[in-house]
Image (tube, rainbow, N blue to C red; front, top):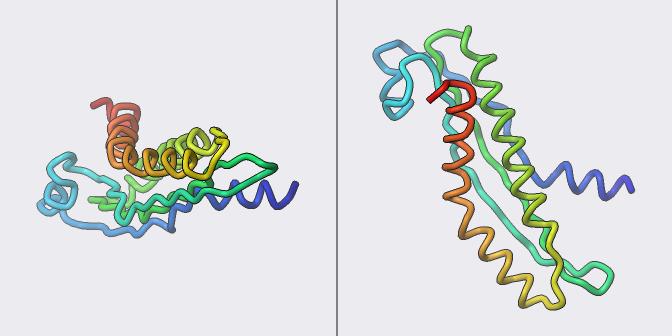
Length: 139
């Protein structure tokens, strides 16, 4: 039981956010024109899907990792940006759990599923970012 919980906790890793307080004149460049107050960029986001056999069936073990970089015009925005990170953590966990919920009769079927999950991830990542921006920023 403990090993299963431990493995589930490792499926998503969000590194400690790197924070930079920058001037108002710099913020739009760092935030790709999407904010003039603060933003969090999720750099180095990676996905890995391995196929493993459990009790005669095959399934994926998905791992997601990202490094959030906060760019702030004031430390006041750190809490708000932390909410975006929490939203992304939730979305990453949901993606990993959904991917790993499927079971397959063969390794080949599992590998096809894993490759499809990896192929779809960049668009899913963009959707996660759009969703948190809409939820927290109203746009």
